[in-house]
Image 1: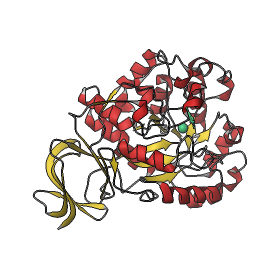
Image 2 (image 1 turned 180 degrees about the horizontal axis):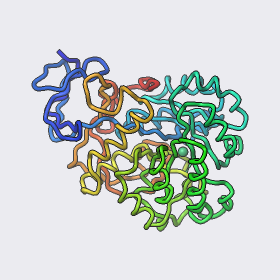
Image 3 (image 1 turned 45 degrees about the vertical axis):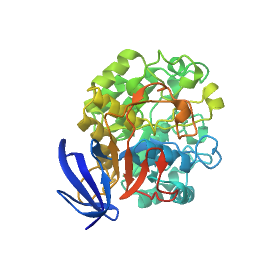
Image 4 (image 1 turned 60 degrees about the vertical axis):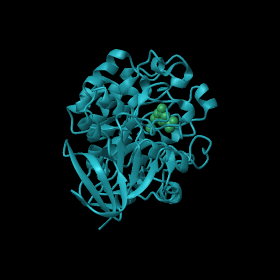
Length: 407
Ligand code: DOR
Ligand code: ZN
């Protein structure tokens, strides 16, 4: 007898569709089989059952920037988008730049988050003498986001520091690679003042220093360079699907900026070679967006946009699941997440290909109501389960802030 059984499931597993039932006991998948009996039954007829996504790059703000986003609104947005685990970046106010601050951030997320999470530590000029301590606490987990260029100078480090850090720690270091010397200034459309060369050169210099995970790679040139190295990278939905022709108002500012359509087409054509898709969910108030604050609220839209691309046969389901669930789980050590197998957490996103919706900024759960994907078609999940619990369906949330735990 299972606690929950997903009936009539069309499961995408080991790269193929199988018709079966999923038996859940507690938080985990216990069995995949035929005619299982359980207390609670979920009828998944007509849908496709996938692992919930793992978004390794979000900025959930909170603290002194609650007007932009909070852990509650950010994690609700994640759920609506079929995301079960998020990795939060450290350019918060105040910064996550010490182990004490990290503990405070974990405590906050434990109280407020609906989805599971991990917090990244920011490495700065001031804290890199603490590396030993960091290593002990976060062995083999992500340590970034390390910024080579950032509007907050406290968070900006240089190549020689990055070299020292790389030599000292074994953790994954995630780098925002834009070379500050090649960025003119922040006045003007970002795609003009932050040229592709800034990313291409920064990536090349980093690769001389060691192995890294590169955040939000936006140029095909940098992508091709990283592919030939042992380093890994992520691409955002905006760099996959948008180009700088749309960037006509300051709201379209993002770091790194949108590139030209030739570049975007090459990235999309080489989707297979991208290890991870991450949203870089970077919410701001509508007033700040109008003044050019960089970033888009994407955690809610990444899986839905990609699922529509699967329906249109532009992407394959296998590739999407690999890049949004399986690969991030494998590369970042989320061992209990990211695939549908007995023993893994029953964190699932259940989609119906027939239910296509148009994206509307106004309807976003994120506090940031501007999206560059206004009017784009998307397939949002019908149901989302987080560790065995029905968490979200049809604009209703069935779990409370604090259900999420450190992954
Ligand atoms: O567009 C961006 N926004 N890029 C970043 O690297 C930071 C982010 C933010 O925190 O707003
Ligand atoms: Zn970011």
